[in-house]
Image (tube, rainbow, N blue to C red; front, side):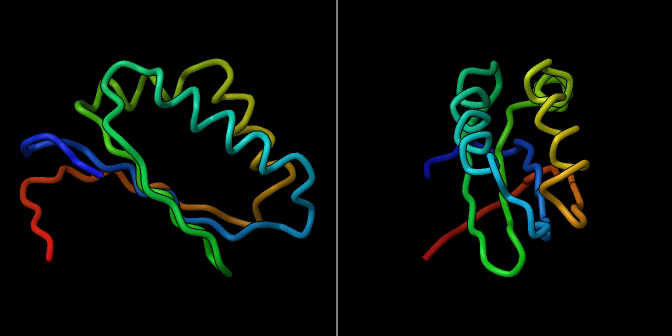
Length: 101
């Protein structure tokens, strides 16, 4: 994934799924498609094993706030808390430097 020049923001979502994941995959795909349509969205990386980690990249804190408050995303958050996750944690970070090999 190519990100813009720094600084930008990363939202790190770590989670442990519950045993009931009915409908989760469809909602996750829908949220990915919807997030890509939001102003300020820069990209996303995700892995799922025993613990899932999704990192989404945003141009500003305001863009992150708008995504958190998006009506369809709010419904997905509510369903996640009620059904799909035993726990989750969200961290919002400012990326000031990056490098790769």
